[in-house]
Amino acid sequence: MRRPAACLLLPLALAACNFAATGSEAETEATSAAAAEPAPVATATADANTLTATGWGPLRIGMTRAEVIEALGPDANPQNVGGAEPEQCDQFRPQRAPENMLLMIEQGKLSRIELGGPTDIRTPDGFTVGDAASAIKAKLGARLSAQPHKYVDAPAEYLSVWQNGVTPGEGGYVDDPSARGIVYEVGADGRVDHIFAGGPAIQYVEGCA
Image (cartoon, rainbow, N blue to C red; front, side, top):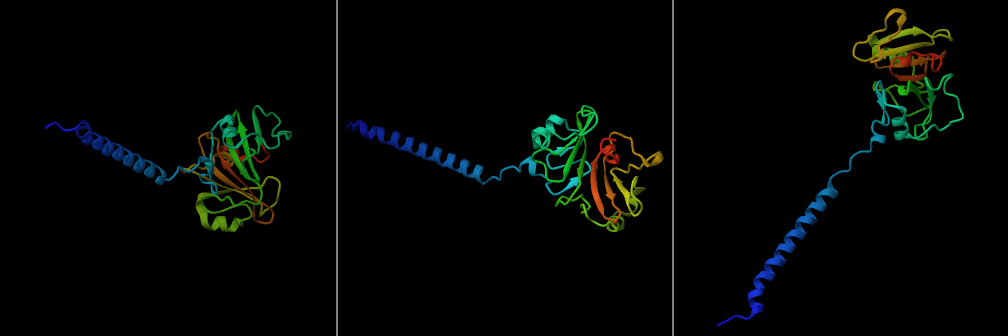
């Protein structure tokens, strides 16, 4: 007895339907898994509340000016003069940088990050602008080196902490280009006025000098 062609095709149709359903379920599971996987954190928001000796958020000491601009935008105040010889040393705040943050570019590369006003950004040791120098000394102890302030009488001073055991050389100056550190500039009231992070440029007391 010959079976109708429709009957012969039925198993094939069911198999096809089963395959399609299986494929659809697999795609759905894959899509669900991808949706469940957390999105990577944007680089621009990494370490947004911490300024380290090597950088802040998307910034890293040593990156090029072009990389800085790509990360945070161009100069927010292009009419301001950032240095006597901008091609050698320049200072500016990118458009998307936090308020009271100033960057120094030397020879086309980021050499220093400065905090110069009220901010939520802190150093890895938990200090920020406005904190008492006495608290910094109490916590960091022998890790700190202190130098008199160039223009203001004590208790104004510069408190420096360098990474990897780097210590100031003759005259209290670190000139190793690979050195990284943080300087707390303390004012006449015994509190931090500015914080500088980066390479040897953190020791400059007059902008680019």
